[in-house]
Image 1 (cartoon, rainbow, N blue to C red):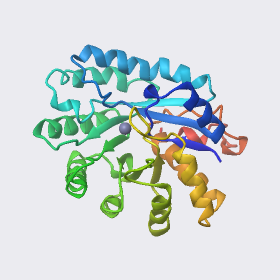
Image 2 (image 1 turned 90 degrees about the horizontal axis):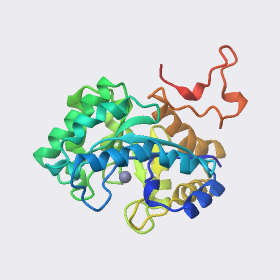
Image 3 (image 1 turned 135 degrees about the horizontal axis):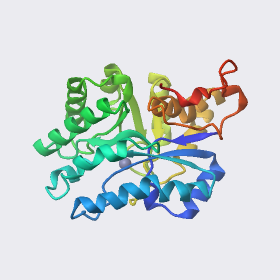
Image 4 (image 1 turned 180 degrees about the horizontal axis):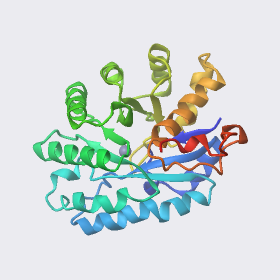
Length: 285
Ligand SMILES: [Zn+2]
């Protein structure tokens, strides 16, 4: 089973995690910039964090044979802190980097006017830099948060096919599916979505535009729940090809839209276009 975890915060994880993930089949990850728990007191603090997401962490992942990509943004929670707002001006410098495959995590935490503004500004950056966008949905008041999220996405003019709306569940899945955006599901050990509930959603809604992640971070979480979901799919009668689509080809297709997802060292020869010799996994232009 080959696995691409499209949302995981490796900065908060140990080398044991990397080892176990690699053994479980995780070959590539995307690490979105997010809230680190401890409030940051200045934009300079983000510079060091962003630099580590595109420098140190890919190096660390490489020690375990895992490819590491990042998404960069001012996260929804810290968008409310005036000390962090200048981060918005730093983003263009990072959105030009090859290791950055989307703008994210953006979206809503408490749905404040400050979050509205940062969300819209960063969707505009995604359009300007021709990058996909990773959108976090609030954990409280999910349905309303999701509706408002989709309205802002539609208003921004970004192509829905270049947006993943994340942390979905049974309440929000249909709304997002009907919007044309990609659907992200974070599988957690004891809250939110579980592998068996995920399997039910895949049965009901199919495997198109579906992304499964562990969203493992500094809280109680488990980087192996992508693998557990693949196994739950097989146990429920899904084929190896279905599992490969959800856990590998879908995230590759989504982030491939950045034109920066070079996985040529990981792929099998069949994935190389015989005419041009180019990797089809690179996607985009
Ligand atoms: Zn996250």
